[in-house]
Image (cartoon, rainbow, N blue to C red; front, side):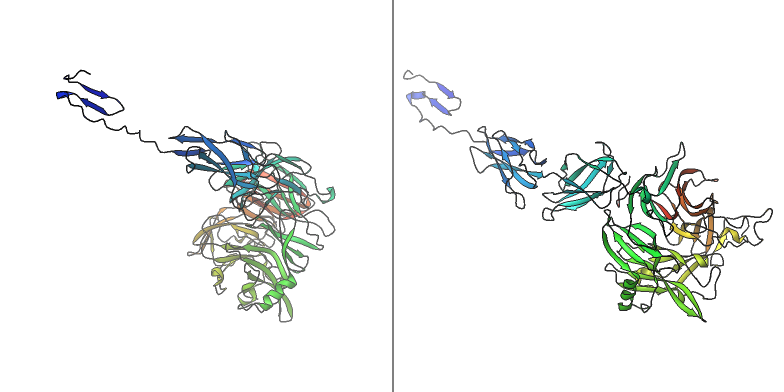
Length: 604
């Protein structure tokens, strides 16, 4: 640069300014480094679930650093200490073996070891499938490495199609075992466990297979089911409570599909007793009451069994009497013959058990009924005694078997109970009030009861009422005030104001399935559906409305042909159209109930 010249230079990136005006030069400023971008890391996927021995590719996204990352895998507390390996590219290989575990996959910046990110991986050991004492039920066991929910999909091919219910698992609870039930006999089934982790990640185990066997041929019930062409029955399975002659070895407690194929059965190994009733509990077990012939409650045994056929708990007549004798509740000082015909399962876990007891009335031994409220520990906490609340002089049918009750249902809206008294031709509502009630009778429904019958051409025609009825159930979701009930009206001692069986008159014996709209305040009962059944059933039976609006009813004991039963699903039309039917040969069917599946809360 020549002296005296004047120039200005700007050098990009050095911030250097030179001015030569007047022959002087300003001092150069020091160079400043570029500000460094912060390092951030993210690992994807953030979570994964793998089978043992499986691989998964993890990826690290890094900003502010192009030096790369170091991958590492570490066990998380509660998991297996051997949690697999990961290579420099992020390819993770889970450990082999039979133990489930939980691992943290971590990527750390090579330039700054304080910068890292992690993902969670669950490693699930393979499920095992074992046989149970029930030839058509398998037990699948799988261990979940973390809090999750477990279910099983199953079917005759790898499309599966059916599912069990879902059960919770925790990392400390150990393996989860699920019964796989609802399979046909002598058939190869595919099944796989499904684990749903709390963050939404789902794991599906590999396909497993199981081949069912069957009961001995002599033990198999004879079931023939038919769907009317063009009709679609309510989906689900049929829970059957069948009665056999004492010498018969045919199973009485069973579940079939709508094609009449046996899916599940239970043999208690007891002699001289029959089941009535059978109900699915909220815990997935069945509760069954067994009792002998003769006086109600004879040799009774109330049993809870799981799907594999294992006895969980039972209460004999002697056990029930001992429990009542030890209970401090009002009215508990009674002695009963045993439990019989029905029980109600309450939302709080209590059981309302129907029991028979006897009393000497003017030298005659009269059999009546009691209701016993058993709490969650099967201790009596409330008792109702029919002898204290009914007129002993009302004896319309088969006295001294005075009441012969056969059903009890719980009214959720007011906490009261409705009991079906066959030999009184009545449904009776009892003040239970969820255990706080005094036991007073709130109303009597039926012939000579508290309600006026409407919806009939001739209100004075007594034959429109039900007689010697069985198996009532609620039609409406509301259970008090204005409500509807359906039941099976056997009709044994039907009252005819003008006689029966003569020319132009009704036959003396026929059964019906009435739906009654009740107005508890006005005390009116309106018949809205009242078909006569194809055959007269002289005992047993039940009726219910299904989700699709159809009515299902059970003809327990048909007279033509004898010793048979039939179950029908029909439309609520006039006349009703048969949608589906099941014929049962060689056995009576005390009840037939459409349930969604063999698992609470699951619809098949």
